[in-house]
Image 1 (cartoon, one colour):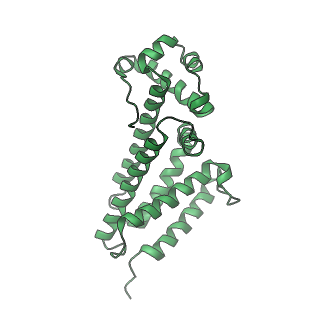
Image 2 (cartoon, rainbow, N blue to C red; image 1 turned 90 degrees about the vertical axis):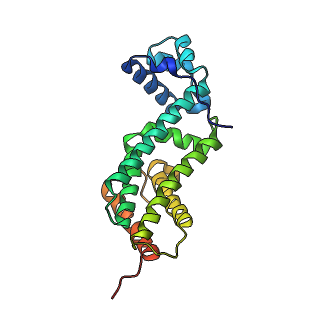
Length: 221
Protein backbone atom coordinates (compact mmCIF):
# COMPACT_ATOMS: atom_id res chain seq x y z
CA UNK A 1 0.00 0.00 0.00
CA UNK A 2 1.45 3.35 -1.04
CA UNK A 3 1.41 6.36 1.25
CA UNK A 4 -1.82 8.25 0.68
CA UNK A 5 -1.59 11.31 -1.56
CA UNK A 6 -4.55 13.52 -0.70
CA UNK A 7 -5.88 15.97 -3.24
CA UNK A 8 -4.46 19.20 -1.78
CA UNK A 9 -5.25 21.47 -4.72
CA UNK A 10 -7.66 23.55 -2.63
CA UNK A 11 -5.15 23.77 0.21
CA UNK A 12 -2.48 25.14 -2.14
CA UNK A 13 -4.90 27.81 -3.33
CA UNK A 14 -4.96 29.30 0.16
CA UNK A 15 -2.88 32.31 1.13
CA UNK A 16 0.64 31.24 2.21
CA UNK A 17 0.08 32.51 5.76
CA UNK A 18 -3.03 30.35 6.17
CA UNK A 19 -1.22 27.32 4.72
CA UNK A 20 1.58 27.79 7.25
CA UNK A 21 -0.90 28.15 10.11
CA UNK A 22 -2.68 24.90 9.22
CA UNK A 23 0.54 22.99 8.67
CA UNK A 24 2.03 24.28 11.91
CA UNK A 25 -1.08 23.21 13.81
CA UNK A 26 -0.99 19.73 12.27
CA UNK A 27 2.72 19.22 12.94
CA UNK A 28 2.30 20.30 16.57
CA UNK A 29 -0.67 18.00 17.09
CA UNK A 30 0.98 14.89 15.61
CA UNK A 31 4.25 15.62 17.44
CA UNK A 32 2.62 16.11 20.83
CA UNK A 33 -0.14 13.51 20.71
CA UNK A 34 1.00 10.86 18.20
CA UNK A 35 -1.18 9.83 15.27
CA UNK A 36 -3.81 7.80 17.13
CA UNK A 37 -4.35 10.41 19.82
CA UNK A 38 -4.19 13.38 17.47
CA UNK A 39 -7.46 15.28 17.22
CA UNK A 40 -8.69 17.05 14.12
CA UNK A 41 -10.74 19.22 16.49
CA UNK A 42 -7.56 20.46 18.17
CA UNK A 43 -5.94 21.05 14.78
CA UNK A 44 -8.78 23.32 13.67
CA UNK A 45 -8.69 25.14 17.01
CA UNK A 46 -4.96 25.74 16.70
CA UNK A 47 -5.28 26.79 13.06
CA UNK A 48 -8.40 28.88 13.68
CA UNK A 49 -10.35 27.35 10.79
CA UNK A 50 -13.52 25.29 10.57
CA UNK A 51 -13.47 21.51 10.74
CA UNK A 52 -15.32 21.33 7.45
CA UNK A 53 -12.61 23.39 5.78
CA UNK A 54 -9.85 21.10 7.10
CA UNK A 55 -11.60 18.01 5.75
CA UNK A 56 -12.18 19.80 2.46
CA UNK A 57 -8.42 20.36 2.17
CA UNK A 58 -7.25 16.89 3.30
CA UNK A 59 -10.32 14.59 3.30
CA UNK A 60 -9.14 12.40 6.24
CA UNK A 61 -6.82 12.46 9.25
CA UNK A 62 -4.58 9.97 7.48
CA UNK A 63 -4.52 12.31 4.47
CA UNK A 64 -3.37 15.17 6.68
CA UNK A 65 -0.73 12.94 8.26
CA UNK A 66 0.49 11.84 4.82
CA UNK A 67 0.86 15.48 3.81
CA UNK A 68 2.85 16.29 6.96
CA UNK A 69 5.07 13.28 6.25
CA UNK A 70 5.73 14.50 2.70
CA UNK A 71 6.66 17.93 4.00
CA UNK A 72 9.06 16.34 6.51
CA UNK A 73 10.61 14.13 3.82
CA UNK A 74 11.12 17.13 1.55
CA UNK A 75 12.93 18.96 4.35
CA UNK A 76 15.17 15.96 4.99
CA UNK A 77 15.97 15.81 1.28
CA UNK A 78 16.78 19.53 1.31
CA UNK A 79 19.25 18.93 4.14
CA UNK A 80 20.85 16.03 2.29
CA UNK A 81 21.12 18.00 -0.95
CA UNK A 82 22.66 20.90 0.91
CA UNK A 83 25.33 18.67 2.46
CA UNK A 84 25.99 16.94 -0.86
CA UNK A 85 26.37 20.17 -2.81
CA UNK A 86 28.40 22.04 -0.20
CA UNK A 87 30.81 19.13 0.27
CA UNK A 88 31.28 18.03 -3.35
CA UNK A 89 35.02 18.83 -3.32
CA UNK A 90 35.57 17.87 0.32
CA UNK A 91 37.57 14.74 1.29
CA UNK A 92 35.41 11.69 1.94
CA UNK A 93 35.78 11.40 5.70
CA UNK A 94 35.25 15.14 6.17
CA UNK A 95 32.02 14.72 4.20
CA UNK A 96 30.92 12.03 6.62
CA UNK A 97 31.50 14.43 9.51
CA UNK A 98 29.29 16.95 7.73
CA UNK A 99 26.55 14.33 7.34
CA UNK A 100 26.62 13.54 11.05
CA UNK A 101 26.48 17.22 11.99
CA UNK A 102 23.59 17.75 9.59
CA UNK A 103 21.64 14.97 11.30
CA UNK A 104 22.10 16.58 14.72
CA UNK A 105 21.30 20.02 13.31
CA UNK A 106 18.10 18.71 11.75
CA UNK A 107 16.63 17.34 14.98
CA UNK A 108 17.66 20.49 16.84
CA UNK A 109 16.10 22.76 14.21
CA UNK A 110 13.01 20.58 13.63
CA UNK A 111 12.26 18.89 16.98
CA UNK A 112 8.58 18.37 16.20
CA UNK A 113 9.31 16.54 12.95
CA UNK A 114 11.90 14.44 14.76
CA UNK A 115 9.29 13.57 17.40
CA UNK A 116 6.83 12.45 14.73
CA UNK A 117 9.55 10.30 13.14
CA UNK A 118 10.34 8.57 16.42
CA UNK A 119 6.64 8.04 17.13
CA UNK A 120 6.52 6.17 13.82
CA UNK A 121 9.61 4.07 14.59
CA UNK A 122 8.98 3.09 18.18
CA UNK A 123 5.22 3.01 18.59
CA UNK A 124 3.88 1.87 15.23
CA UNK A 125 1.36 4.60 15.81
CA UNK A 126 0.75 5.80 12.28
CA UNK A 127 -0.73 4.66 9.01
CA UNK A 128 1.75 3.56 6.34
CA UNK A 129 4.51 2.84 8.89
CA UNK A 130 6.18 0.21 6.73
CA UNK A 131 5.99 2.34 3.59
CA UNK A 132 7.27 5.48 5.33
CA UNK A 133 10.26 3.77 6.93
CA UNK A 134 11.10 1.91 3.74
CA UNK A 135 11.13 5.16 1.76
CA UNK A 136 13.25 6.97 4.36
CA UNK A 137 15.77 4.14 4.52
CA UNK A 138 15.96 3.96 0.73
CA UNK A 139 16.64 7.70 0.41
CA UNK A 140 19.22 7.67 3.18
CA UNK A 141 21.08 4.61 1.90
CA UNK A 142 21.13 5.95 -1.66
CA UNK A 143 22.59 9.21 -0.38
CA UNK A 144 25.36 7.57 1.69
CA UNK A 145 26.15 5.04 -1.04
CA UNK A 146 26.76 7.86 -3.52
CA UNK A 147 29.33 9.29 -1.09
CA UNK A 148 31.06 5.92 -0.75
CA UNK A 149 31.19 5.40 -4.51
CA UNK A 150 32.64 8.86 -4.99
CA UNK A 151 35.23 8.14 -2.27
CA UNK A 152 36.26 4.94 -4.02
CA UNK A 153 36.56 6.77 -7.35
CA UNK A 154 38.84 9.35 -5.77
CA UNK A 155 41.01 6.71 -4.11
CA UNK A 156 40.04 7.75 -0.58
CA UNK A 157 38.08 4.60 0.24
CA UNK A 158 39.22 1.01 -0.18
CA UNK A 159 38.29 -0.25 -3.63
CA UNK A 160 37.54 -3.77 -2.32
CA UNK A 161 34.57 -2.55 -0.26
CA UNK A 162 31.02 -3.19 -1.42
CA UNK A 163 29.44 0.31 -1.51
CA UNK A 164 26.04 -1.08 -0.52
CA UNK A 165 27.35 -2.80 2.60
CA UNK A 166 29.53 0.17 3.54
CA UNK A 167 26.55 2.51 3.13
CA UNK A 168 24.38 0.22 5.28
CA UNK A 169 26.93 0.22 8.12
CA UNK A 170 27.52 3.97 7.92
CA UNK A 171 23.81 4.81 7.76
CA UNK A 172 23.06 2.49 10.69
CA UNK A 173 25.69 4.14 12.89
CA UNK A 174 24.66 7.66 11.89
CA UNK A 175 20.98 6.98 12.52
CA UNK A 176 21.69 5.41 15.92
CA UNK A 177 23.92 8.38 16.82
CA UNK A 178 21.15 10.86 16.03
CA UNK A 179 18.58 8.73 17.88
CA UNK A 180 20.69 8.80 21.05
CA UNK A 181 20.68 12.61 20.92
CA UNK A 182 16.91 12.81 20.66
CA UNK A 183 15.51 9.80 22.54
CA UNK A 184 16.62 9.51 26.15
CA UNK A 185 16.09 5.76 26.62
CA UNK A 186 18.45 5.10 23.68
CA UNK A 187 21.29 7.03 25.27
CA UNK A 188 22.35 4.16 27.58
CA UNK A 189 24.49 6.46 29.79
CA UNK A 190 26.58 7.62 26.83
CA UNK A 191 25.78 11.27 27.66
CA UNK A 192 24.58 11.90 24.12
CA UNK A 193 20.98 12.80 24.90
CA UNK A 194 20.69 16.56 24.27
CA UNK A 195 24.48 16.71 24.39
CA UNK A 196 26.17 20.11 23.93
CA UNK A 197 28.06 20.77 20.70
CA UNK A 198 31.51 20.02 22.09
CA UNK A 199 30.42 16.57 23.29
CA UNK A 200 28.77 15.78 19.95
CA UNK A 201 31.88 16.93 18.09
CA UNK A 202 34.09 14.65 20.16
CA UNK A 203 31.87 11.68 19.39
CA UNK A 204 31.77 12.54 15.70
CA UNK A 205 35.56 12.78 15.54
CA UNK A 206 36.07 9.42 17.23
CA UNK A 207 33.45 7.65 15.11
CA UNK A 208 34.93 9.01 11.89
CA UNK A 209 38.43 8.03 13.02
CA UNK A 210 37.16 4.49 13.52
CA UNK A 211 35.75 4.43 10.00
CA UNK A 212 39.01 5.82 8.59
CA UNK A 213 40.91 2.88 10.02
CA UNK A 214 38.50 0.37 8.51
CA UNK A 215 37.56 1.99 5.22
CA UNK A 216 40.36 4.34 4.28
CA UNK A 217 43.04 3.53 1.73
CA UNK A 218 46.47 2.81 3.26
CA UNK A 219 48.76 5.80 3.52
CA UNK A 220 51.69 5.40 1.18
CA UNK A 221 55.12 5.53 2.92
